[in-house]
Amino acid sequence: MASARPPKPGQSETGPTVMTAQLHEGCPQPRPDWVPEGGGAGFATWVVEGVRTSAIAPRPTQPRRRELSIDDFVDGVLARDRTILARAITLIESNATAHQERAQALLTRLLPHTGKAMRVGITGIPGAGKSTFIEAFGQHLTAENHRVAVLAIDPSSSVHGGSILADKIRMEQLSRNPNAFIRPSPSGGALGGVARKTRETILLCEAAGYDVVIVETVGVGQNEVTVRSMVDMFLVLMIAGAGDEMQGIKKGVIEMADALVINKADGENRSRCLAAQAEMKRVLHYLQPSSEGWETPALLASALTGEGIPDVWRTVGDYFRTTRASGDFERRRRAQSVEWMHALIAEQLRQRFYSTPGLKAKLAQAETAVADGRIPPLAAALDLVRAE
Image 1 (cartoon, rainbow, N blue to C red):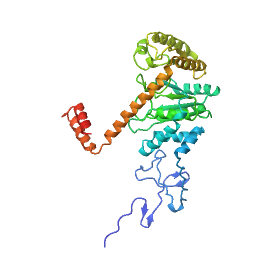
Image 2 (cartoon, rainbow, N blue to C red):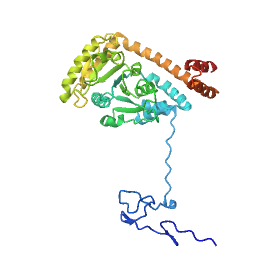
Image 3 (cartoon, one colour):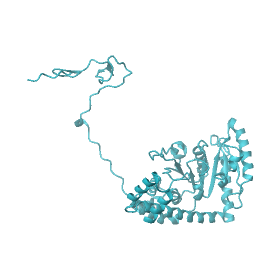
Image 4 (tube, rainbow, N blue to C red):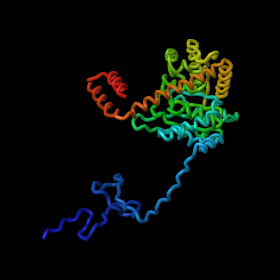
């Protein structure tokens, strides 16, 4: 007869035993076998008895939200229901084919109710205080009986595609204001500091009765100019010590700005901001104004104290009066609509190309050939396009 197998550590011949371990919250509990003998509280791992599944009460099923029809969306947005507006934006941002068809039907219905808002784009380098400035700016506007929508674009991770979407958290006071609506959205890899569906979202906010729509861009540098093609006024936030005059003269975001605001002009930093303001005024003297009949100003403001915020709003009003009188406002909006159409054509062609049946195998072969150096990338791309 086979001999009995020796008991495992922590067991006796009659069954498992409780190890004489240190007390954990007043109860003797065993330690894992990898914990050294005499290991103190530094090894904070304990074997805890599990919970019997039969003792767990079944979780109540949550009722699913009722799917809204196009009529429900239209009525809710026009009634200024912020919950339905948020759901409408989610529908617009969806990449599902069925959702895109419903989104376009919704936009078609709401289009006659759009176009009346003042569209303002705000950009600046990281650390310029964009979110803090927008909160102070929005609070000032709502105090003057304006309804403000803020579309905050946050960068998406190139590793896992996610976004923090923390702008609404930063704008704590404005987010509680009943006359304000804040919608953070991921950039989704779109270039230029905006999201792919920002234009459509602007139309929804206008249909919901918001008369000032602010688009806050990601804030990545001098190539962040896509927002200029979807707003009426482009405002660039700067901070003292960001660069020399040559940096400002460089072609890019500065030459497309309708107003420059040197932010954080308070306390000991105010003298540096005054010097930066004088410097940017010299820079602007060499740049052609972005709008007909308008001279780009350089302003000072402090989002912390609120100083200069009313001056920025007066400048915005002056800009809209000037561009409407010159006809530049209407010309720009018409050009933006056409540019939007061409951008959508390019996007649809790209999607259609990559969804072509049989392309996947040819694409894999072309990638291998290009990686091995057997064919130039342009030749491979042309072959794939001709094959499509």
